[in-house]
Length: 122
Image 1 (cartoon, rainbow, N blue to C red):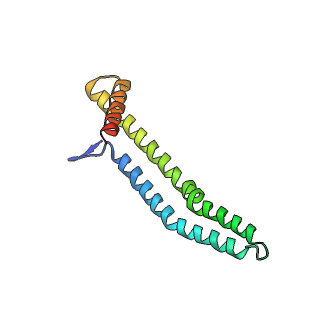
Image 2: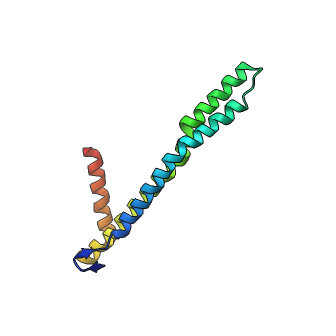
Image 3: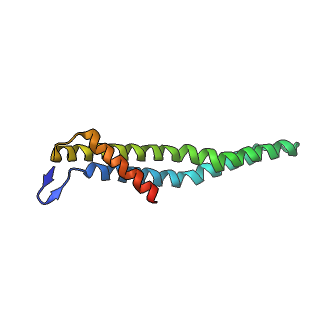
């Protein structure tokens, strides 16, 4: 869609990326607070009579705050980013198909090959 001199065909892609960036920022702001809450709970409920059990709980807490929580909250961002990318490629391929009158599968294949080449070249 064009409005005056502005081409708005792919503006949704930028809106989706903006929304994802805002979501990512809010996750990154909340994650330290969540980690701190988990630490407080663990220290508040720590066993005082068994140092071995406390060491085991500290190891579990370390795994939770260093691996599980960040992965749990950040992985959906990666999946969403991939979905936005895939959707954008399909949308752009459709536009190219309409302009050049070629198959969408061929355009998507070319785009995929370009990404592979870019990945190889670094």
